[in-house]
Image 1: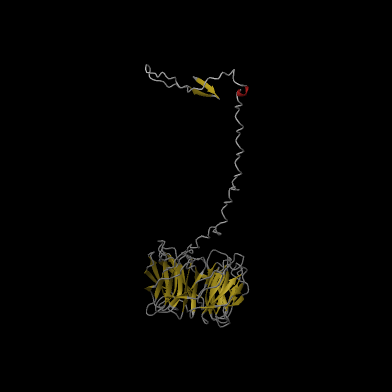
Image 2 (image 1 turned 135 degrees about the vertical axis):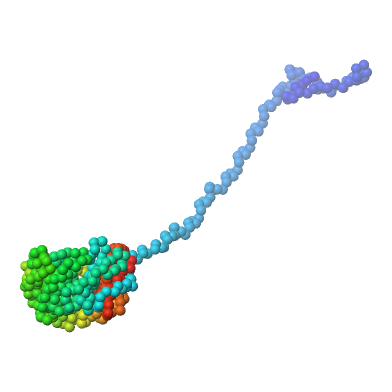
Length: 455
């Protein structure tokens, strides 16, 4: 029997014997009698089985809010590196200094070529039309000139020897076209005569002798009267005068105007000293240490002289000169060898025929025959000078402003050095020097090749 109680099911279970052997004793009724709901007392009505208020106690979680674990301020402490801004690793200035390209001047040891007795002067030109420079050397003691042909490599060989036509030796040589060719040779001697050797190539065509009666060391040469013929300006050491001899264009001359100069004039040189087209003249006066400047009129006559001291005083003994622009102002300046005081005088031209004298500077003993040329390629004129009391060529490098450096000495031979010629003798485009070296019984011409490092 199933009784439903309080919602639970109770099952009546009977215990008995095996079938056929059941005990006659009654079964113990283990079951609960069935209660008729209709006869059950009222208080047995369905009990209020509503579930008690088992609402869970307020188990709201305690306030376990985590402590303020807001993201900790984990900002890194200010560990900014010390100012390690890129160190100045700019490489130190290891750039090599620019190479010194300034020229280094030098001349070779001399090659001496035997010529006539007591060589005193030398000039250069191409005498055999092979485009290579040759030399003419004047020999004082045997009254001759030698023509030496160059091979273009710095060597020379005597080709011709000619007499000068006089017996007074050779004081100086000059070249000009006196009716035959630009290679005609003018020889001044110490017996008051001037010879003109007219040349065709290296061949002597004629010798014309001018007996001037004047003791001239070196003449000025130029076209003084406005025609096409070269004239001569002859100072006379025995009087304060300068005589013009007008050329006929055939090697002969006619006496022309005479100008007054200083005492004991020795040499003359021609150039354009002012702004007109007429040649002017400068004359050295050994008697009072001056030069006389004569401005040409273009007709063979000259303005009255203006004199300038060439040294510290009147005893300087000026002899030979050279004209060129020394300071780059396009005006001719004057260099004078002062033989008595062993100095060089420099007069800077103003371009109007006047000069500004500067302090003289020391050079070799008894200087003579100055030449101006850029010897080291720095675009500044340098000065080379011979010396009557020296066996050397002396070079003063120019500063480009009319001043010069102390002399450099270069051996030239065994006797005093006279005239100096300048030319490219070995084809390297650099100027070389040829110096007349006086000696007995034979002089030499010394060839000094330029060994400068050129810019």
